[in-house]
Image (cartoon, rainbow, N blue to C red):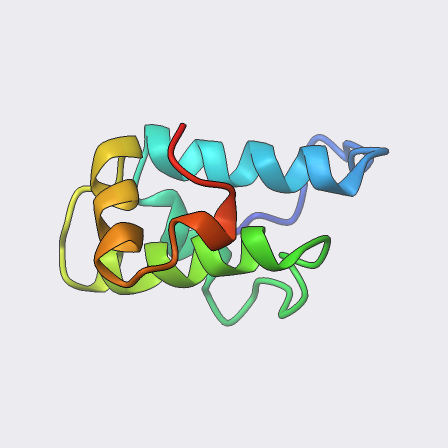
Length: 91
């Protein structure tokens, strides 16, 4: 599946909000993480803060392991690695 922006939508004006939306999409559909980490995706997709980058870096191995990615499993994954507080804590 190629995501070349067929609707020609402009990028979000607030990059952090766009990143939050993308990370939220993964919580809704775990397969979205594959789109973000594919060779065609930008290497600078997550760039507004360390928290977003750490969350993405947690989602990738979860996806590779075939684990479901939702708020509970992601929080648990981050807690096991003592990183939950570094991304803003539990929701």
